[in-house]
Length: 164
Image 1 (cartoon, rainbow, N blue to C red):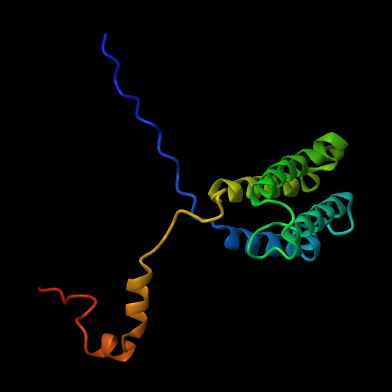
Image 2: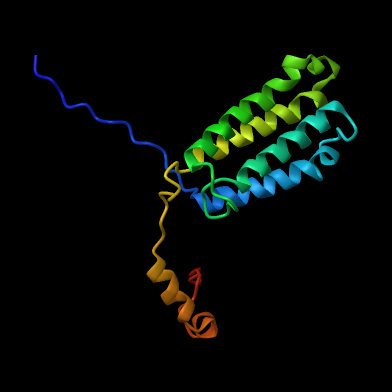
């Protein structure tokens, strides 16, 4: 029987590059440390402390990651992504390991939601750091040089009138 060539499955796009990943790292870390516990309704609880600690650790190792927004550039980007994955799983598991899930959904839903957010962010991040979504930069630059007033008032209509 002849062998058919195997078609390799196509990977979903990974548009997030290292710079955008860094922006998300610092934004998420800062949010977790400052306002997230209050917004989630867990201020002053053990869950809030755990989430703040996770945010501080995340922001901390982001500062020493070798990517455009890293300050020291000691940890390779791929190692950073592995730490993100481990941290997401650990954070999501924390209320179940400690038994605090028994105190109600507010004590475990934020952990699981944040873990899922982190894993989704990782799924969209290109591990090479380049990102695989590249727009037509030249077309954007050309469009930015055009006079917007002319395009609005002297150009074709955006919507054609209907005929009755």
